Image (spheres, rainbow, N blue to C red):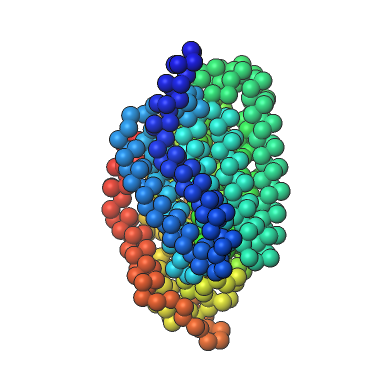
Length: 485
């Protein structure tokens, strides 16, 4: 390719990355604001509040750019590094919604954070956007590192000492998973001679090698994605970080990286040899079991949700290993439902006992004193368990239906075992999910409860409750958008 052709290709690629360039501009603008205004600003908390408000406005503007991008034809950007299609746009919308909700959570409950927090969130969102479009192992790795470095700093910069400890653990486990992934990518390049996941040589090269060699190389290369999804064996960091970091940041980090990582796995599963699917199915079942069993003994709400997210990541993987159009659509619906439910769970628990260490005993009896918030938390927990009439039931039903259809067509015994194991684990999860409603309504309150919420917060709680139930009765709208991908 001649130089003028390369320059033309670069201009065309940049023209198709308006949301990403917008985020780069926001990031640089926030950096300049911190450098120029903070040293002269006596009230740094007020300055941080202004930056949060600017980030909130920026997130709303980003949704408008994504709406315009929905109309664009699928095409490569910087071929073969990035690929923009409707799947990428939908997942970027989900990530932006998570970012927007986290900013609202921060402002509603009046969290005080350093000004750098808003800048780091923008950097993480940018990394996740790039990850949604990544079709090359190099861009997958670099986007993951951008997300990871921002996440480590975001957790560590929080004022609480426990946050610094959680950030250090996050960094250590992240560094190990990153090293494993990089070594796995080097093995893949040695086996196939390409890092482009859209290149047929990747699949052909893997099939020409021993199944054991192929499986080891692939599992190592997927280590970074497993780390972001909190899948076994890369799940160890999750409970400590969830307990240490402030609740709004945990809520964002629990859903946004999972959405982007799931899309990358979706692209990879569609081009990898079928032999990898059974291994991924085993990882899904182990993750579901480990997460559910470990959650039974938790006495902290955030640690309970941490082990819950390990199990939920396994259910996300179930839709992918079904290896069908229905399975991919079910996994997409599941991640959208899980994003709503997990953001709602963290917000509502924080709304009931703001800025606390979220020990389960502190929620005893509060459901009778704040009925609407208690009812909303109950509905969220029922939805996470997968019971009707909530969107959580619809999500699990779609995933298991796709798995059953795949078993009927392929007749693979491991698909049936995965289905049975998933259903049994769904029953086990009822024990710890219903523990929270039991404490809220059937245990006496400990001490005097000081309500910290006002009527807009009650409206938000009611709106989340209505949305979770409404998507059970009317999932067609969301399924329609997923079906056109």
